[in-house]
Every structure is written in structure tokens, then in C-alpha cells.
Amino acid sequence: MRRSLEEIRTIANRAAHMTRADSAEAVVISSISALTRFAGNRIHQNVTETDSQLSIRAVLGTRTGVASTNRLDNEAITRCAAAAVDAARHAPKDPDFPGLPKPAPLSIPSRSLSLLSMYDAEGRARAAAQIIQQSDARGLVAAGTVSVNDYAVAVANTHDVDASMQTDELRATVLAMGEGGASGWGSLLGRDAGTFLPAQLGSSAATLAERSAGAGDLEPGTYTVVLAPEAVADILDFLGYLGFGAKAFAEGSSFLVNALGTRVADTCVSIYDDALSPATIGISFDYEGQPRRRTPLIEGGVAIGPVTDSYFAAKLDRPDTGHALPAPNPYGPLPLNIEMQAGDATLDEMIGSVERGVYVTRFHYVNVEDPMKVVLTGMTRDGTFLIENGRLSTPVRNLRFTQSVLSALSDVRAIGSKRQLCGGEGGAALAPALLIGHWAFTGQTG
Image 1: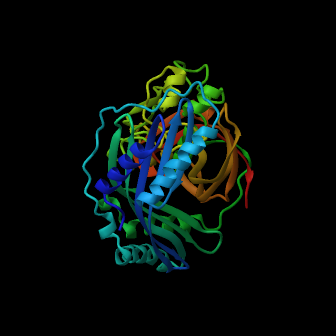
Image 2 (image 1 turned 90 degrees about the vertical axis):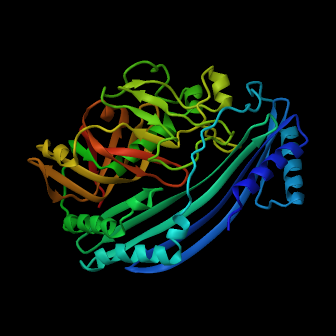
């Protein structure tokens, strides 16, 4: 069992106030994660992991030091506090350090944690079996996961910050594969167990796999594309990592530099970070105990600004948007609950409007070529199709692309009315499908 919310809140406050420094902050995270993994149409792994971690940040003047431990007894906390103070003594001074933040009003949603009991080992096995059956019945092979993460976070500091919350999340993935290069993908992420329909998820991936068998070549070039939500989520993730953080903005490596208040995307494009959305996952405060809030990043195509934490809010003379990550943090504040505003088009309408183009289910192995222009290179995967005369026609072998995201988002022809929550560890993106006028494919990948 993970530790209770009240228990980790008590530990965080005790750790912060017993640290012999000018000021101190403590973060405690306690979690229980359960995973069932399947491959070759059979379950081959079932694991459960329980963990608790304490991190202490000690402040001496403008010097800070951090230490952590996964033992939470009094002796271990005392040693961790001493190590944090020692690290601060040896750290360089930082004249820009504004001190630890003071308390701010928090909105803590009341959540009933039921996913772990609904999807215990037996429940996960049943869900996996339903997913697998959809591939097995069609002569395909399925691989994937069903997992639940139940966790609690507490943040306290010597300026009376005292924030704590518990939450959970459910994830499922499936890759259906068959002869002739057939492959199809499906995934689910969220907190609402009612949206998890294992058979439907497995069927969707299997149908994609069947349709993708015998894929042919496509000449390199610039094509109109319909990007499914998982592909759009990759774009949003890279925008967040490369451009929407205050550290990149302060260092001059973000595309937002000299662009605030100007149009950087089509007027139909609005992107936010919103940890308070009922459709997303995560906690409603950051790792300094400050409230997360709905933060506009691009609104009506116009660049609004980066997300901040207390350090970069002071450095840039901007409000603290509540996006601090656990210290020590080399990345600065980042958006963890990014979303694109939905449009009014259905997927069928978007495909139906394209005379000749490419449909992309998701991207793979995406890398950065130019951070200032957000030029990405990568590959399509698990369901790429030629669009001809308003319908999906022949499957296409996976394609390599090199494309500026900003250029692509300046030519958005339609935005999907339905959004899907996608993401990996640590964050999520709520993404619609997009119809984009141009996307540069540079060749086949195999």
C-alpha cells in the first residue's frame, strides 16, 4: 500500500521544518503502480511496485542544495536534510534566486480513487484478454499494456506552503501486427474507467492493421495531411518542451522570443496548458506547492507567453503560472497538461475534403533539427494511408518527414471536434485531429 495523504503531508512538513537552513522545502511522492504486459497474444508480465520518495531543498542565502531519499523514517529524514544543507553550502550563489514562494490559494479536486481496485491483477488480465481477442480472431498478433498508477504528492516549505493531493490514472496500449507489414495502434489515457472499452480499443488497432497490410511506396514530396490525435500530441509535446517553457525563453532558444503578441500560427489555433481540466490527469499544484492554472500559450494564432515557476516568474517579471518541476531541474518549468482547442470538423469530413494527401495515425522516433523554428524529423508508424478523392485508399509504407511545426500550424485547414488524451510518463496532451495544408515527406523508412 502507498502511504496515506495525511501521512506524507506530515512527513513533508516535518522534513521542511527540521532542515537547518534559512528556508527549506520538502516534496514527498508516494505511489503504487500496477502493470500487466502482453505480447504474442498472451500475458507475459504482471508487476506491482510501491515507492515513496522525499526530496528536500535547503536554502542558504541565494545558495540552494537538494537531497533525496526513499526511506522516510526519522533517521533517514535527518540525514537527507543534512545532505541538502551541505549541498547548499557548496553551491554557487545565484543572485536571481527570489527565495522560496509563499502560500497561494489552491483548488484541490475531491477525487474518488477506484482505478486500482477496478483494475487489480484480475481486472487487468480481463481487459488484456479482450484486447488480445480482437487480434487473435483475425489472425493478428497483439502486444501492449494495461496499467494503473495511484499516487499522492505533498509539498511543504518553511514559508507555510502546505499542499497535498492524491490522484490516479489508467493507461492502455495495443499494437496489432500481421503479415505483409500490417500494423495498427490504439491507446487510452485518463481517469474515467467508463471510457475504457478494451474490446473496442483492440478492434480499432486490429482494423488499422488489416487495412495497412501490403503497403506501397509514396514519392517524397509535400502533401496535405490529416494527422490523428496521437500525431498531433507529439507536435504539442515538442512545442511544450522546446518553446513554451520559461527557461528556453529566458535563454533565447524559444520560438516565442521576439514573438509575443504576434501571430505564429493560423487564427484557428489556440493552445493552452490546463491542469484543472476534468479531461486531463495529474495534480492541481506544482512541485513548489503553487496553484496550476489555465495558461494560454497561443491564442487565436497569437503567441501569449511561456509557463513559469517562482524563479523564472521573478527573473522575467511575469506571473507565476504554477509549472515548477521537482528540484533540481535542468529544464525549467514546462507545461505538463497541454491541450489544443477543439474545432468543429469530424474526421470523415477532414478526409473527405482532401483530393490527394496522407493520413497519419502516429509518429515515431521524432527528433529536433531546429528548435527556434521547431523543425522536427521523424517517421510515421502503425497506419499510414494515401487519401484519394476524399477517402482512405491504399496503405503506404512508413514515411520519413522533416517539417517546421510552426509552418504547418500556419496552414491548418480544419480541427477535429473530438479530442484524445495522449501522453507518456509525467505529462499529457489533449489533442484533436488536424487537417494541415502541407507536410514535407522526405522518403520511405522501410
